[in-house]
Image (cartoon, rainbow, N blue to C red):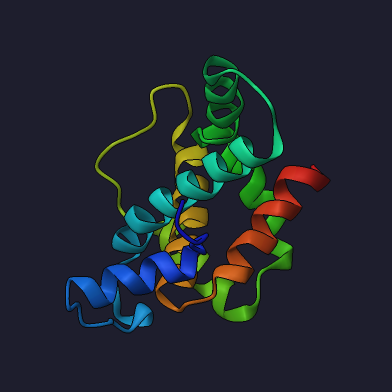
Length: 145
């Protein structure tokens, strides 16, 4: 089996393999940041679940789903907001206040906006290469709440 690949190595490999030009995260629309952040959140969520628990796929799915829904993410956003840096908080507000064209199936619009704000922060941090900060924030949310 090949050598272990860290998330930042994976992202860097994608950038290099596809000859992509890196973009300034502060110039990205908040919903674009949230789009990326949602996927990074899911990657971290599933990776943590698989490596931390000896569960069946069905139980892994339940665990991950319990952390990856608008209501849970809104609660995490409320918990993390006072811990955001000034820059992260500005991105959070941009994401939270963005005009969205969809809504979550099982959550209210306020929860959906808070979750979008959190995802925007994660997307921003990913484009900034701050993967350690992403995992630090999610670890706090998942273990301290």
